[in-house]
View 1 (cartoon, helix red, strand yellow):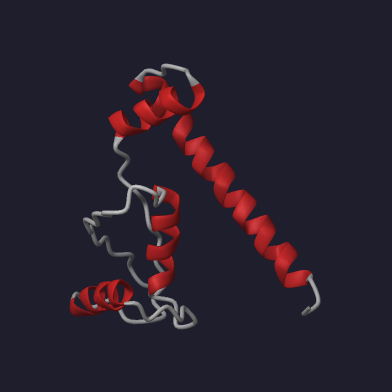
View 2 (cartoon, one colour):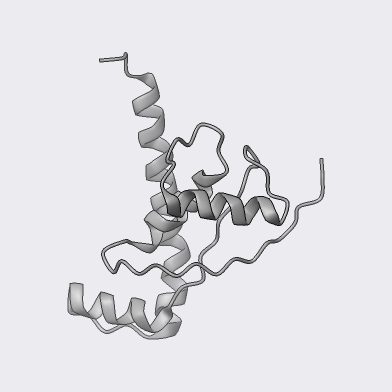
Length: 116
């Protein structure tokens, strides 16, 4: 196998309704050759990745850098619970793993269903 390379990319989203997890999923899908979205934003991201040598079809693992203070505020606003940064950093990896496992299971369920 080849040596893994790290590419750090800063992406800023202007739409406050877009979740970080949905952005991570979209970024990971951008290099997929089966990803059909041809919006100007996606095309620009693909072009930027190609400029640094990431070709279409190259598998990518996208790892977000969390805005910890924002996550704290969102949790307090949504659940009425104040959580320390240490607690948040301790629980977030588990939450992400849970989300990934759920996504994987749902993908298998969808793949096993006959075409409607």
